[in-house]
Image (tube, rainbow, N blue to C red; front, side, top):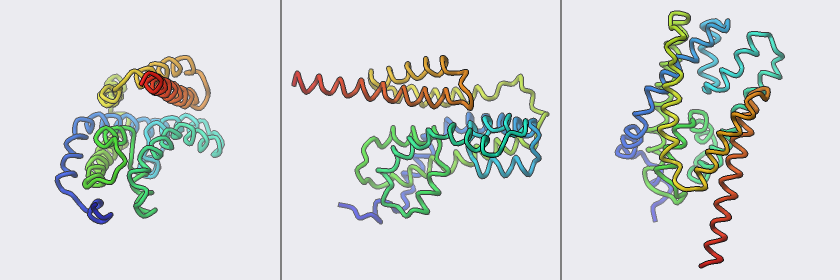
Length: 242
């Protein structure tokens, strides 16, 4: 069996594989970054404030949810609570990635967690569904994370410095939506996952009016519970008829 150092050593082939797998999503991430960058400047943030926000927060959904509150002078506690609620999905992502990298030093796990995102997590789990130690996992993840982080930051800074020069009619945010859909479809591998996605979609529409984007959180939780419940029911039926 490979030692921890062998498993976590740099693997150029796995890094290149991660980069190639994530390459189709980079344009969508960059376009979404431009949208967020323009939104930050149009909301009244200075170039310095917007730049610091994208480097520290690194979450388009949390940034967009916070901007109206910042513009209206909402209390800092409300702004932080809103960003926290919107980003609760990353707790789920962390729980999914933890078994793969729990042996790494805390600082490294913190750093990797900070630059992980929706797309990179989904692509990694699609490539490595098993939590068993395997050479190349860490390099593959880095091959996903680093280019995605660069694409997002470049896009965001382009949006920040272009500001109002980018027309809202371009609808660049739709490119980011397409990128997410390209990842979502292959992950719907069974009826349980499909039901979870459908339920989450319906709930997100019905709960759209909830404050602080709570509808998204409710949709994610209900969708997850639905998928888990259906999968467990199917497993019990298999055992009973086994």
